[in-house]
Image (cartoon, rainbow, N blue to C red; front, side, top):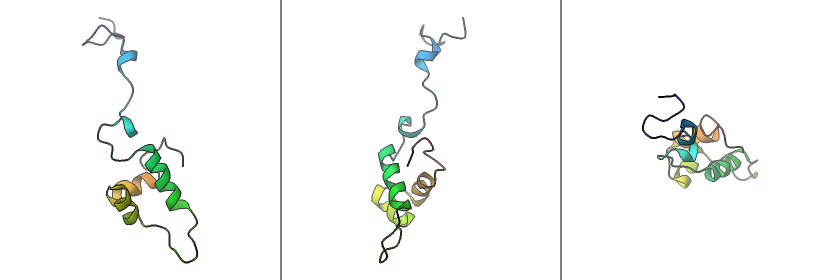
Amino acid sequence: MPETISPHTDTPLAETHRGPAIGERNGRHRLTAAMVREARALYSAEPEPTKARPTFAALARKYGVSRFVIRSAVLGLTWKGVDA
């Protein structure tokens, strides 16, 4: 059987393989690209003189994820394909 044909179907691999399940293609994602853009904008925006920059804990509560997840997304450790 040629390597270009999927072993489970008669379909060429290029039609069945869509690359790694990253970002919203991952079935277990908790954030969307729009949420990541918004969180990055909120974190990087210059705070008003009377207000501080939002903490990762506050952003995590807003988006319903852990501090680790939002920190990784905001700092670009994950969701690297999303531009701010």
